Image 1 (spheres, rainbow, N blue to C red):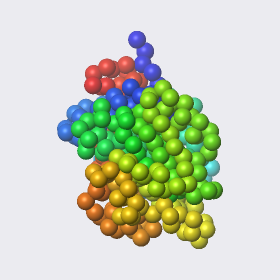
Image 2: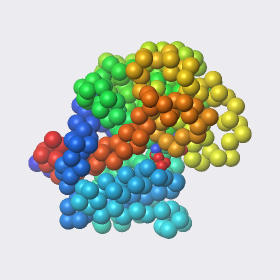
Image 3: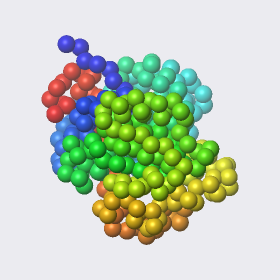
Image 4: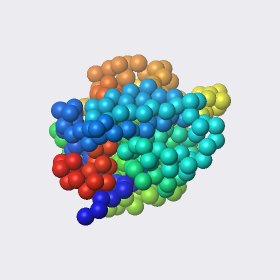
Length: 321
Ligand code: CP
Ligand code: NVA
């Protein structure tokens, strides 16, 4: 039977059971870094950056190598893509030489175009709209601290800060897919697009999760199992720094807000973090913070995702186990 070409462009590109399969694989890679080697050969995997990165660059580079493959890391400044070569032509070329394409870029339409013209799996390594690889790592972190992937459904997670950014959108869709109670809080003017909220609510209705979007940070964190935040100034918004410094102060994750969550609540941040802005040093460097596990889990989660995508493409069920 022919396999399926699947992509991970946004968090709801996988359903509840598929997300679980990927996270279970992530748990296995966490315990054994060489659990599967789908790119042995080695096969090339293109990892392209139109924006800066530390974690995504290192985790995909090391991850592809640990999967037996060759990470072909391409920067915007050193590629024709950066000089305006069409995305479709880039997809047609890379497809002939690589087994998967991972891309960090600006608009979601760009990764969608890449996926339309590629005949290998395409992975969104962050766009302005979504960061699905980060969400897999974050949920893997919760699973590790809560006794497994089955514990994810029913967890209450709260995200505070810029609720219109890629992380907020991804928590909404990814959390709904996992069957979590997702609370997102931000100031007026920085709340998610209605279409994203609608999509998350539709998914949550199927998985038993729930969605709350609010301007009240206290309502969001009340009895939460995990608190998340992110920078108030995302990549590409640097010239809005002054405007973006003011509206978010009530959403800073500090000791007072952490006390409203469950006593054993975890704190996560995709990083890079700005201490004294979106989170205090006392929280991110404190006992409830699991941000270094979270960063490491980019490696395990993405290896799981790439293996799962290759398993689907090759219709190799052993790779999904
Ligand atoms: N969290 C994250 O994606 O980090 P980088 O920007 O360093 O890749
Ligand atoms: N929202 C942030 C996430 C960084 C990993 C950004 O897009 O810059």
